[in-house]
Image (cartoon, rainbow, N blue to C red; front, side):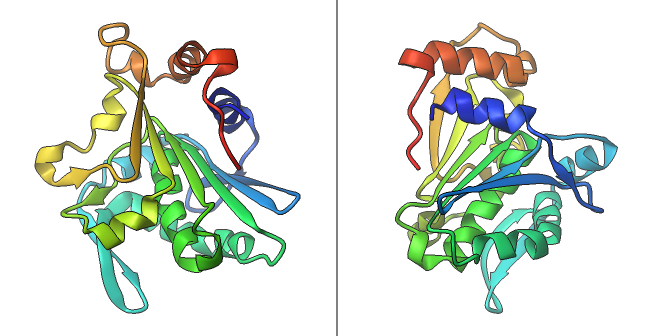
Length: 213
């Protein structure tokens, strides 16, 4: 499957809406679990997007890293729904996919999957299309490993991928893949799904990059 195909599935599929306005979906095929997170869809989502103050993410009573408070709160509300999917004994590989606001949730889900399924860490993958910065402060090498298989896909000047700004202490984690050409889009247009889809098709041969399960 190409990145274009994965992105197309992410932006066109139906989603499950929760009481906290966090939209997710999943596929489980032959032991491979793919979890999808939708982009901003309503006022409540944007209020969470703009809730910049940081919050600690704890594992077993200890703070492991700090993150965007709005995204972390929303992700925490999803854990009771996502955890049973990740811990299903039939699952032997996991891919996490999100766009925009959903990419931020996907980034946090990727770390949670790393934590909950240590047996799957070697093959865990995640893709955040138009992903904002989520993590705050200095990221140590051992914490950075939690996002070793996560890729942020940025369409060059895409404004969302440059927010929250670095001067506030926010940073990207995982690897960064840039597509598109500088000056081709305005910062807002570069984030539009049709622009990202176009560049994914143009950037790679035969429909884009290959995505390994």
